[in-house]
Length: 391
Ligand SMILES: *[C@@H]1O[C@H](CO)[C@@H](O)[C@H](O)[C@H]1NC(C)=O
Ligand SMILES: *[C@@H]1O[C@H](CO)[C@@H](O)[C@H](O)[C@H]1NC(C)=O
Image (cartoon, rainbow, N blue to C red; front, side, top):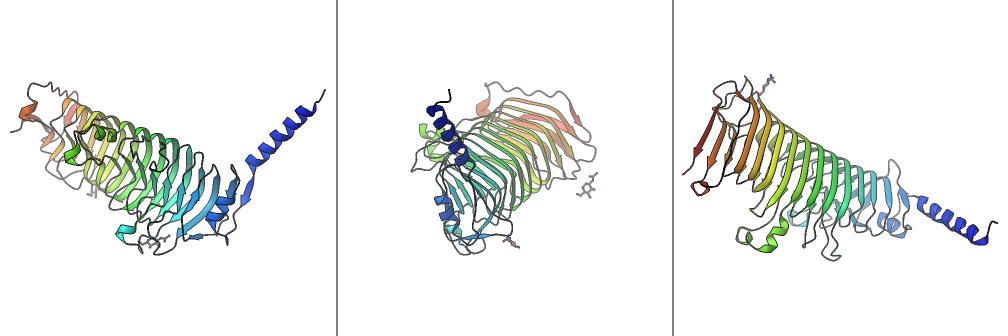
């Protein structure tokens, strides 16, 4: 028999389904923050093409919502204000554009366009233009004391962003982990670049990134002052299990850069890298268990080591091709690295390096095992391989 209980259960289930599916059209003439604040949990807010919200304060998202098809710009001169702050789990932003005001705010007042302080987010097809700071900053908030776990950022475009288009950070002893970033295309971030992973993140996967006219394409960082390198607290800023796949760029200072201290960063993989017109393609420092494979470098701007690893342990560099360079210089150099493997490196006929690989070991390192293996090192012209002891 069809009982009343079953009937109510069906009605309740239907209501929940309705609530979940609730779609609200955003009013272009209303305050975006208030519309977001008044929306029920789980609603989908949909903007309209041709509508741009001008924000005089941040839109704070404090419950799971989906917001889709919208465009918003920060009021000129409004400093210290993000366009959107996410402080609830389960927020989705889809098909949107955020425009910053970097030309009208002072250096001290810069702020990122999108601040994410909670996990479980999904940011899809977003453009970030002229931000005074980052495009997206993922960072745990001191006030909530909750770590950021899981989130995805896909199909992002950045233009004229002052700092990083995507910056992933841990903070306040709270570890940010399991963030998936795929598809980031960036132009003109002259001070920074496309993606930065910093201050103690774990299991971050970054793929399909392209950057043009940037300082770097991707960066791995911590912010430990020199005097605090030995503090146990500093170890919390070491990044672990970070993957970068298919990272490309042109007209750069660096392709990959490390802005790191000796605090035990580990398990870092860079695979499929292609950089042209850069000053240094890969700079690794204080990284343990680091591997760089399938690297292609063309038309470098200098002949200083195009790949440089300093004070790294368990380093593997393989399948690297260097093309079209008239600079006399060194293709790959390592200083004070242990357990080094270099293999399958090709210096093409149109390069002029005087050395393919230079390995330097500090006197203090003597006695610690250093292995350097070269299995197929084709040096077309003057591409010697040298190993020497510095000091
Ligand atoms: C961003 O800034 C550039 C100048 O640097 C300007 O030409 C462009 O119109 C700005 N874009 C937007 C969407 O405001
Ligand atoms: C090498 O680079 C120069 C510019 O530096 C460019 O004009 C030339 O076409 C490049 N050659 C090849 C084979 O890519």
